Image (cartoon, rainbow, N blue to C red; front, side):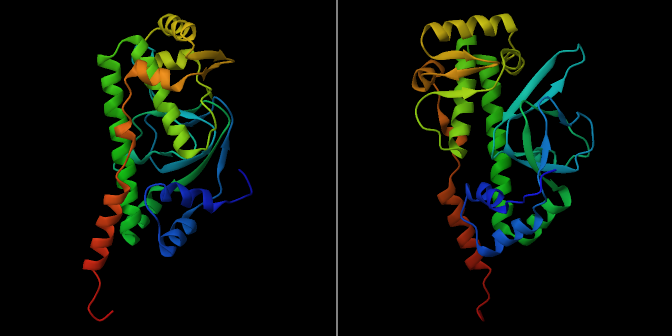
Length: 260
């Protein structure tokens, strides 16, 4: 476990959705515990275990997965720094999926009772968390379309562009090239393809100057080119912060006593 406790990082993740009041910032900061460091290929939690915590990923990459009865694996999502993980299971006793590190990673843990505290004391933070869950749902819906209705080339391009978009929204990454530490075996499990099919598709994209193998991952060379292949529409990654903020202001004004 690390010794430093940087609450500014956590507050910033919530402020990516709406501006927070001083009271809300203090509430979030009061709940932050020291981050936990996990080595590469380490299980954060197993499928079927108790859903006692959610996390904010501050460093590294992790992925959610479901083990199947025949011994295969379905990768459900990859998470990049800044992502909040585990909110989907707030109302359930057990985890519906496992969580594994793809690289060395650092995660800030929050207990489920702490989540209830946020709900009880801050309408703003409650709305932020609801927005995050809705965004996760939108990503999963788009993933279903990707799995069922796109060609292998489009599937891979769409998945890579989505990861790039999510990463660029939390990190300032100059230029067009972007390295993703995602091995082909994991891409295959995420896209419902064989490793051989993913390898062949990666070669096609490489021949078109769109990607380049890099170690155990891929480097995106031409993000716009991949976007055209995937016919990518980022609507499902863009929340309506202006409408949400306006709704919160209206709710706050309605609850103000005339004596204030």
